[in-house]
Length: 466
Image (cartoon, rainbow, N blue to C red):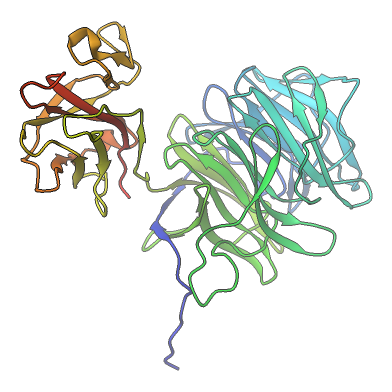
């Protein structure tokens, strides 16, 4: 029968996914551990197949899987946590559950094709379905939560420094849970936690850790008539990873109250965006999957997972949009009109490929209208001089150069309110995606003023395609 389906509103953005044919592919598996390797590719260990435990170690290089034959290896397990330690150049494996259901708390590292068991004096208690993420600024691995030997959810936090675990006790921590998501947002320098399951229910809350304490974040987007924030439904066992090109934490799939799902979302620190694949194929609904960012191909890779009695062994690459952004930095200097020169992106303008970006240089003295825009590819140095640079040395006391003046653009005449428009054409060239450029305005001053020109604040622009 014909009908009408209404989807509650909220941010949407496109996404594309590509099934990658691989050779020497492992069996379909769920509850496995899959992580990027420091030198590119991926590392796979553990999980459950239709035939029982998956006991082998595999590495992925391009589209080729290779079984590894280390001298020693962790015992078979599911629902362990595996991370790439970017500081030490290895991978860390902790805990999980053995084939008879006993929770484990052994620690292993993988490097150069070999596993190494670390007999530590202090470790987290035995657990499974916990999560780990690597904080690249503080150079620490973060472990949170999981399920203990009796199946109860945990709320403890541990830090890994490359040689040992130490318990961490922030003033505020998320409630106990397992099978949640944990990922480090390198742009905002926050560890993000989403969802999972406690002793009685599936969860959909968002928490962020700044290195000192956790804060619960309520998404700001709540389009009417919704009574809850816009975002993924409560779920567990989903894939979650940070995508540095998109500067978003990405979430896909999982187990919900309605069963296995395959919907895709990203988190920007304030709101969720739902991703519509359009005509692109997408991974089937699943849980127990693993998602990680492949720095070699600059793509998210999703591998395996299952639903019911189905175990997948498919590898997908997922491309999120590169979201443009802008932000101001520094301050301008006060001009002859008593106002500070200010540069901002015009309302409604976007810094995306193939579009015209409009910036407004405000507070230009209307009686003297020659203005320029300076575009630089660096805001740290120019011709060996550190930035920011006091421009008193060139007759502009009180003004500061904030960007390298690599390119200069004459601006239009200011309007009656003293705003000059800077129209910047962004070429439709893929290599510009994710590139950051830095902008600053300059306006000549009226004769007799203490300076021959004034300059604005700086503006950071990250070029995107959405």
